[in-house]
Image (cartoon, rainbow, N blue to C red; front, side, top):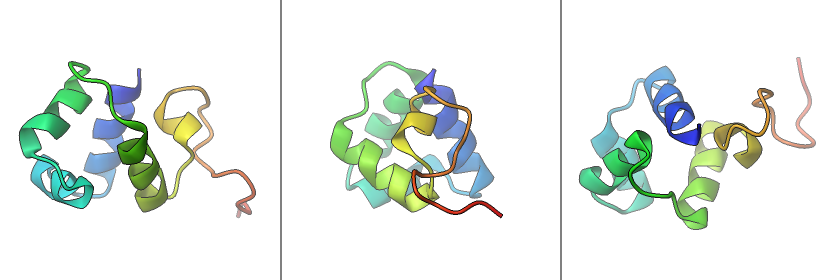
Length: 75
């Protein structure tokens, strides 16, 4: 479930919903709907968040548990 990953990533970066919404140029209400699974996240927002958090879109979408981006070297 991608909406749980959105919340976990946000909290791991010590951000609130308003801050993430500002990054996406949307409202806190809309972003809250993404996190609660009430609204599907647009591809544009998914890509912005993947780049911002340094994870793959597949990780956010729950298609993998490996957060590393493709081609990113691992420690």
